[in-house]
Image 1 (cartoon, rainbow, N blue to C red):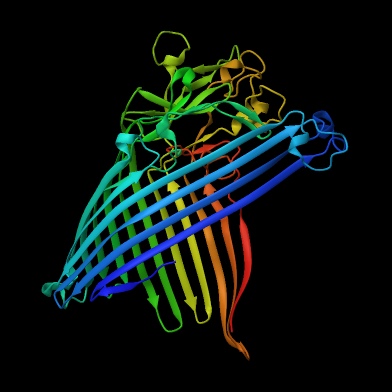
Image 2: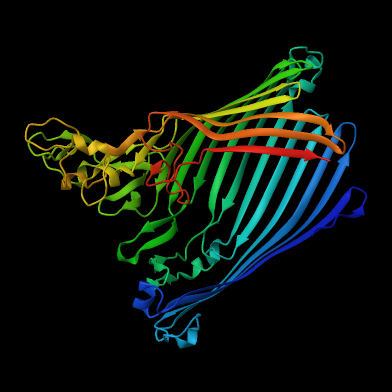
Amino acid sequence: MGLDVNLLKNLVWKPSVSLDVIDSVNDRFIDPFRSVYGRQERGTGSQTFNLFQDFNFENTLNYTIKSDAHDLNLLGGFQLHERNVQGQYYWGNRFPQDLREFVYELSENPNEIFRKEILRELSYFGRALYTLNGKYTVMGVFRYNGSSALADDKKWGFFPGVSASWNVANEDFLADSKVISELKIRGGWGKTGNASGIPPYAHYNLERLNQAGENGTWSTYQWSSDIGWEVTTDTNFGLDLGFVNNRIRLTADIYKRTTDDLIMPIKMGQIGNILRNVGSMENKGLELTLNTINIKRDDFTWNTNFNISFNKSNINSLAYMPNIDRIGIEGMGDLVRFSAGQPIGSFFGYQMEGVNPQTGDIVYKDLDGNGEFNTADRTFIGDPNPDFTFGFTNNFTYKNWYMDVQITGSQGNDIYNASRFELELMNDFKNQSTVVLNRWTTPGQITNVPRANSSSAMVISDRFIEDGSFIKLKAATLGYNFNNPFKGLNKLNVYVTGQNLVTWTDYSGFDPEVNAFATTNGVLGIDYGTYPQVRTVILGLKANF
């Protein structure tokens, strides 16, 4: 809910408030007699009460001055956000034989958990935007943010930014140009703060212990009392170009983005994972977009959009320890290593040289030269970050027909196909792929698949790293518009759309657009039983009456 109140000429006060409330109750009960599990537990069940409240209040003042040459806009205000989460969880088993519903008090083994969290965030912000003669624009912004989740002496952060642009096309020397229809030069610098994902009471240095419950075991996690804002500094320069009445438009942006005080969990021996500000990383790159109107006639049009992005990532520094290892694979070790001087999310392990024809065991590269196989032989074995990504869209219209085609792609990224652990390791009773038919079986045999049950295969190595480059027909739509087909019906649109139709790739898995650990910062390109994107075909109708 919001209001616009004109306090004075050109001065607008805008207060707004919102409240989201979700109140839910969930009951679950397995009686003591109708299933094997129920009889084993003598009945088991749970009851969960959850209350979620999200409150936002924002106040702004906006002042504008406009004239033939000058355009000034001033904005200032503050924003208050409070998130309140409350939960009560009751679980138990061993109930009376005749019970048909969950009654907590009748359990011989009752358990209960109470949860209450409040997170408060407060921001003061301002913006000044000035344009002279429609040619020169400068803008300054700031935010002063506070979060209750952060350490007492680090709750507040100041995040300023400045930008400027020059609309060269409005200068007199280009006003009558028949070739250049748009030319703008842009640049900016700014800082932003991030505290998302930090538990509300992290600054109390609390520890979450192992607790067994009906839905599994919660792992040990130690919060940090010293955690502060993660700060990203962004510098960018851009160019907008238009030719021939903007039938050809080119946009180019070059950027450098440095993030300091990275928020990540680190392992501290038996203490477990501790959430800390651990270091600095950098992304820099180039983004290009080309829009063209290829054909424009009364009955036929053809428009094209092409974009391509080049990005290089690097970890500048780490605190507390030289490396941070993530994504542990049971029985095999950690797959991803963060280390200064390396791309973000790099794969770390051994380099496979082949299979010993006499023993059938895998031979790994002896990097430390001591003649033995040990952890010092590990190195960086893959980079999940692509050299570039691109998208290519074409839109066609012919009379009442239209067709849209979108192609996307990625080049130069590695994928760790961890799904092959289950299909090629030959260390348990799972079904295996046909690759294992080429496994080593007799001395002298030359193959790149080790013998069955070889312990040498049970380590992270480049054996399962594959090229993840691909080109994909991401979407295609064909439709027809009927104008006034029936009395009372103004327009009828009939269309068919396909998504994820065709993929061209050398990757052996189901889908090269994978990320088994999408919620883990900085971890890309791991396929571990990842469900592929669904290929869909949709037939639709849209009607306007």
